Image (cartoon, rainbow, N blue to C red):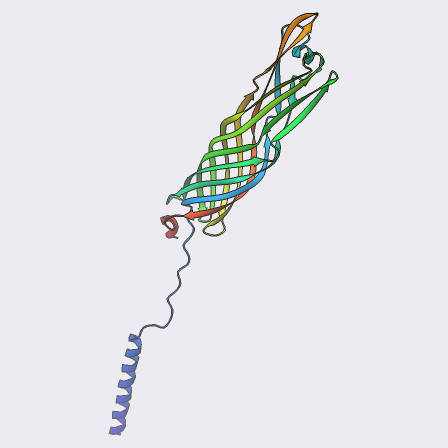
Length: 278
C-alpha cells in the first residue's frame, strides 16, 4: 500500500508539472486579423463624367434702328424679320475633373474641384421666313468648365453629400444672318464669339465602392451672363435718299447640367481619427 501511495503521488506531481509547462508554451492560434480601416476622403482625385445639359434661357433678342423707313426696324415692324427668336441648346455633355478633399474629425469635408466638358448639342440654328427672305440665328456653347469649392458631410464613411459653387466659363458664340432685296449687298452678317465667365452652383453625392474608386451623381446650374454681337450696319435707299440701318443681337447663356461620374482617389495619411474610433 505504501508503494502504491508513492507511485500515485509521483504521477500526480508529473501531471501538474506537464500542465504548468503547457500553460507556459506560446499559443498556436493565429492572432485575429484586424478589419481594414474605413475609407478617408482626404487626398487628390481624378475622374471622368458624362450627362445631359440644357439651356434655361433660349431667347435671342434683336435691337434695330433706322435713320429712314425701310431698314431693319421697318422690316421687323412689318413681320419680315423677327425681333426675338428662340434657339435652345441641349444635349450630351462629357469631360473630366480633378480635385482635392480635406476631411475633418467632425465628418465635414471641404474641397476644390475643376472640370471641363464638351457639349454635343452646344450649337443650334433656327431660320425665320418672312417677307420672301430668310433670316437665320445661331447660338453655341461648345464647352463648359468650372472651378468650384465644395462643402460636404460624410454621414457614413463611404458616402459624401456636398454642396458646391464657384466660377463657370465657356466659349459662347452668337450670330444673325439677314437676307433681303432692300440690303444693298443682299446679305448682312452679324456675329460675335468670346469667352464668357460667370458662376455655377449645385450639389451631389459620391459613394466609395472601394477605398480608391468612387461613383458620383451631380447637378449644376450655371450662368455665364449675356453675349452681345458687335452689330451690323447696312445702307439702303428710302425714297431715293441714302439711309442707314443697324441690327444687334443679344442672348443670355445659362442652363443646367445633370451628370454621373467616376473618380480615382489618391488618399493621404490613412483614415481620419473620427473613423478610427468606430
